Amino acid sequence: MSQDNKPRLRSAEWFGTADKNGFMYRSWMKNQGLPDHEFHGKPVIGICNTYSELTPCNAHFRELAEHVKRGIWEAGGLPVEFPVFSNGESNLRPTAMLTRNLASMDVEEAIRGNPIDGVVLMAGCDKTTPALLMGAASCDVPALVVSGGPMLNGKHKGKDIGSGTIVWQLSEEVKSGRISMDEFMAAEAGMSRSAGTCNTMGTASTMACMAESLGVSLPHNAAIPAVDARRQVMAHLSGNRIVDMVNEGLCLSKVLTRGAFENAIRTNAAIGGSTNAVIHLKAIAGRIGVPLEMDDWTRIGRDTPTIVDLQPSGRFLMEEFYYAGGLPAVLRRLGEASLLPHPDALTVNGRTLWENVCDAPLYNEDVIRPLDNPLVADGGICIVRGNLAPNGAVLKPSAATAELMTHRGRAVVFENLEDYKARINDPDLDVTAEDVLVLKHCGPRGYPGMAEVGNMGLPAKLLAEGVKDMVRISDARMSGTAYGTVVLHVSPEAGAGGPLAAVRNGDWIELDCKAGRLHLEVNDDDIASRLADTQPREASRLLASTGGYRGLYINHVLQADEGCDFDFLRGCRGSDVPRHSH
Ligand code: FES
Ligand code: MG
Image (cartoon, rainbow, N blue to C red):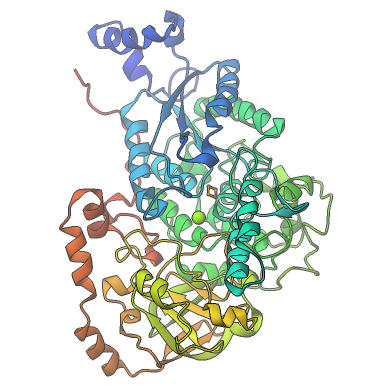
């Protein structure tokens, strides 16, 4: 602490001395037109920007960053914008998840190695939010999230269509012959017609809601549309606020407490949020040192009604969600029913979560429904375990068919994604609607990167018969915009020697979501001998031997129940200023 009770600035270790080092650190910065007084003790605020034209959901971030800068200047800080690896969900192959940890390393090292006192995390597209929070949490500096905001509602043939969700729907309709290819293609331009992230309650909107419920963004950050001027106002106010946070020494660890994560888990159930949140929250918690287990999702999320009626679980889109009152209205509704586990959790604006939302208005009860008339009565992410998933697997009840959540069926097995693609539409495929589709080798190591392929499309011949849903099981993830009775994140994965690798065509599988059970009706000895016959590790080992980032990933990625972080990245390494560079 300095004499005026403000924490000593990290940036003073660069800019605060009248010697050779200070000269060097300041002089080069002055080539940007900064006068000398900018280096006299102002908080230096990093704007960590995931802008990229290859991440279309974040392509408006240069402009949005200008509003953050205005707020920082106005509050007496010095803004310094820097780019980090941008995980664009729509373009990156084999999956943006492969590089989430890479981006988090980029963020962590950029913050710690530079003269930064606090940081605004500009995130939007799915993986960018966890990547930035993971990196910043490992430094534990003052930080807040400014999300990019969702796109306006998609439009097609005079109707609203939702990002991602409409693609899954229409592609099944093409396969079943109900619509033409021309109509399918016509929807393309209307789906993404403004700046912003997916407008469904997919992973991007879910993670923006997670940030808001964790208390690491200002209220309303999650839902204001990307192109609404109020998004720019919020960016401006966030710029104001981060300067105060530095002066107050309000670091992430004071906000990202165990209580905050419990609030977020409950919120995820209420919004019908993405299954990807299970992985990302675990990874963020691991960085800040908060214990979080798979069973916390059952303990805290269970029996929480899903009251936000948004696609893919329900009807509406993020525009309606914002106009209905946004996340503050949901949190108020939860709090009034004593369903917020920790209303007193501190948020980045210095107030508690409850203080932020206790007066929040709610304008539309079709979109944010009453607790006694929910979309789904028990909306919490369902965790299942058993001999097929010893470390757990997940299912999203709000996006599933209730009758199928208790089901016993015969396995129809696909060894990998290519095998699935080659055979799923074969008219001779031996499959009925009562069977269970099983997809292997799509986990963190096996794919690699745990792609969003778990909501595998149904066989064409069953779609033509009008079948709408089937039980599907895999070690993959699914897009937050997807739906179906889909068991995901089976852990350990097939590619790490998990029992999923042992399933064979015709085996019987029992799913019982109420009892939290996923059982393969094969005895332990047979499972063990089948696993000994398969060599799931071989493929991973070969891939690892190709080296590069993929090799690092396969060798160090943790399983889904551990958040898919790298083993060596867990934990908070703080923000101590490194040695001089010269
Ligand atoms: Fe970027 Fe959905 S693809 S938010
Ligand atoms: Mg996605």
